[in-house]
Image (cartoon, rainbow, N blue to C red; front, side):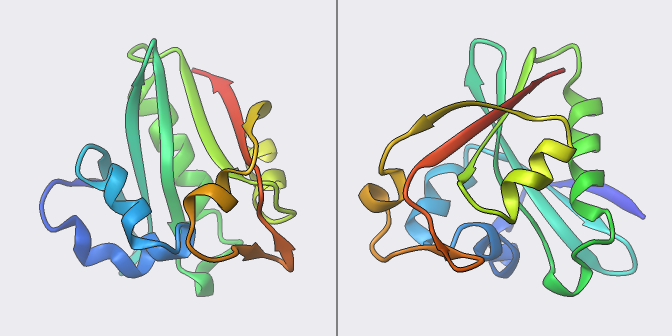
Length: 147
């Protein structure tokens, strides 16, 4: 297994990016400025895009594992990789997500704690309702952990 940075042709991974963010114009807002990593374990199993948000904050903008490999620890491995790679460079790792029974518990298991939220983010920024595990996403919940 290896995790490596993708510098060119990031859009080749759109099928994975769409798993975590289903609207292309939203992905375009961070894809070019972000640093992308893919996890390869006899084929690409997941990806992660991070951006420098200033003031010592690194943000996970997109992280996804192919559905057939959920529950195998690949998402956790990507977060651990990011944590190790950027320790000492940044002070805080942040992620924004919907208030979903699927994602919030995952991030909490990875050591993140709720920090703040942006009201109506999904209503204001997406051209269609977003649902996850049968729950409509309305507010963006930000979670953080220290490096």
